[in-house]
Length: 427
Length: 185
Image (cartoon, rainbow over all chains, first blue to last red; front, side, top):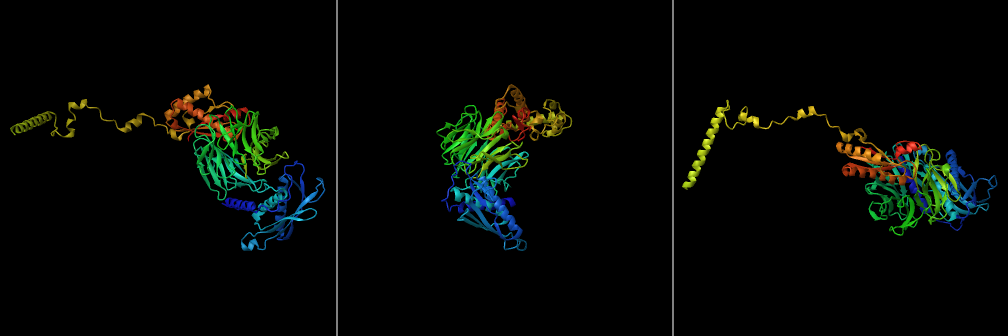
């Protein structure tokens, strides 16, 4: 119950963040420019006005999270002093104040909010570009920091950051596997299912209110939807055979899914109610792993009609089929970037699987992982179209890693001994 | 009028004669006094021609062993064996077809419903392995149906690479994990 409440609170905050966005968008950084030209931001320690030790801790936490968010975006370098080993040359600064709770939690029996004021200013001129004030509960400090960092990124680039996004994935638990959600920076791990069966292939709805996923009841597959506001799960379709690989349409009112209906899997469009809208493929081959293009008019999927699994593109009526991959004897799990320009997928080379990124035209194919990464599977794009989450067993057990396709850098997202697979990045 | 009276007289006379004859016959046999007593025939020569009375149910239990409760058993316990596949393949080889012939007999005799689950080794993707696992389970189901097992007795699912029988990233483990597994649904 506790975790469900927490999830609802966080999601409410996320929704608030999306509404609050906007404001000053005159200042732009060139996000598509070379990855190695970054903007330096000075992060001064926040001033603690009152509240004692709790406010000091909150100020430290805010500073650390905002700093990480700016660095993880790939667009900024962050420091406290100019120069230094990294030769930082600040153009902007983040400043702010933390004012502790006026009420005492011990006497009122409540957890009182802290007042936080955060500014983005030019440096060294200290011209105010952005001011945000928050009154978060102690449990909302992280969300506050992510929200402000997102505002900073939006103010300086004109595009929203990914600081409030989350990743849902499947973590093995003995004979079953449960869905978990984690903040994009690896914090805030939250278990979403606990039903002792396999729960696989989760997919966020565009507004984050639903997660579609595949599970088993009495050994048979069905497609389910989890309501992220209240944790309720309902089965939407169970056609006999496979019911998997859901991908939510960018418009939010339908999904792609593979249904085998006792024969071989084909791609279908279905409504969130489970009603079939249209069957898109007809063949004796395996047709799986559909992923919408950002406009929701085309989709990429896998077919082994030639004898090996390869990527194809069709439109939303199933027409205009064209083959996309000719290199590699095993290509699957394609995901179309939310920017539309790239497609990432998994390719098997010998006994191991690697991650490939290419243009959505099929050109400029790059294998972005190597043998050190062992098996790399299930790529999923961040909403910025730059970062990619995938599962790798390079440590001996599958864990999630985030790849920055501009910089070619990697960051481990999840830790622990249980295998983590099937990540899906929220929109 | 006359005719009908005569008919009736003849009918009555005949009936009386028959009754008398039967009474006399009954009188000949030991002590059975009443003709319409159901036990009248007992002990007479006529009894020998009647079929023997049904044997009480209890006697059959003594002579044959109780039928096993197949429905509560794992198929392996009544002789059903898993079959294995080559890398990336779902076709049945000769060895598998031999095993499935024996499985078909065992399943028919047991009269049970069995679940066939398709499994893959860890190589390749989760999605494609779910589809390949289903192809393997379907190949096994189709072959069993061709051997006369009713399709209604066979349920099919796929776990892909998600429920390995052997751990490890080597040929031995991979070979054990590419299988169609029989279990109680």
